[in-house]
Length: 266
Image (cartoon, rainbow, N blue to C red; front, side, top):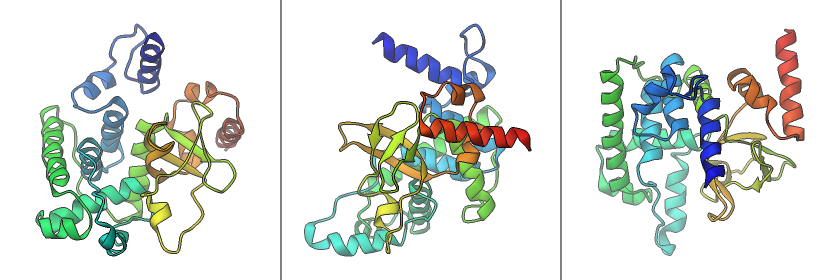
């Protein structure tokens, strides 16, 4: 549909993938080298700047491969959930996916380990193949690959920065503290998915006020998919200013504009 095409072009413009004439910019040309959707490609390129390439490549592979979670048999559901809980990362689903990939590698792709945790060995092996392909592209076009640093506070911040650089178009805010998330770009209200790390953790805690999500489709129970907490200050710092200015009027937009004014005043 023409509307979808226009939206896609607008998104590419926000991602700095187009020049003033509507052709691919330098960033856009680099993004096009990767067999990834534009937002993920942009996040991967940003990870070079923020020294978190190793982790972002793993995440990109996990997001591109088939979903890794397998529904366990009813009688095993409780024990599998308990085991999965050990893989949850406090910073969100994106970090949990990296955790899972790293654990799979550490267990040498053991199928038994996958079954115990309700994970698909096939999907995780595919993620490994995709990861190798992405690294090969990075080497070919001579992008820097930073050493692994997963688990450090600095790396967590850098990963969030890289993610926001690509996914600022996919941010939502909890409007009432109960997990009703209004998406910034269109005022649709969505929810966290049942498998979200914020819902699986014990004891459960209040849903994060601001989140970045990988995707959303109304057909999938009106849930955001792959969700991680972000700080709105970071969004204001990293998202293009004209994107923030063009957001539909809302309380969320007002909060971001207020933050921007404070940052400018400093």
